[in-house]
Image 1 (cartoon, rainbow, N blue to C red):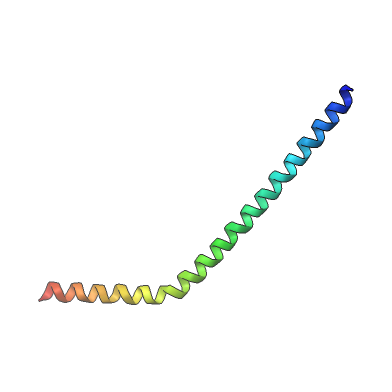
Image 2 (cartoon, rainbow, N blue to C red; image 1 turned 90 degrees about the vertical axis):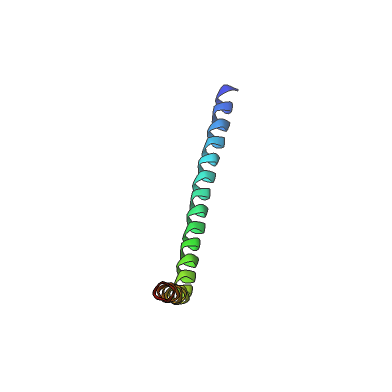
Length: 66
């Protein structure tokens, strides 16, 4: 009876380790996807943000010189 209990506990422990490994892989894939999407969005929006900051700088410079 006792060896059967230990073998069942060992199976439960092994299953828990497999689930933890699977969760780690899933979180890594999600993080990778977030990084790729962020990079693409920042690349696409970067030129317009640079342009906007240039206009703000020009407006501030003209306000200071006036």
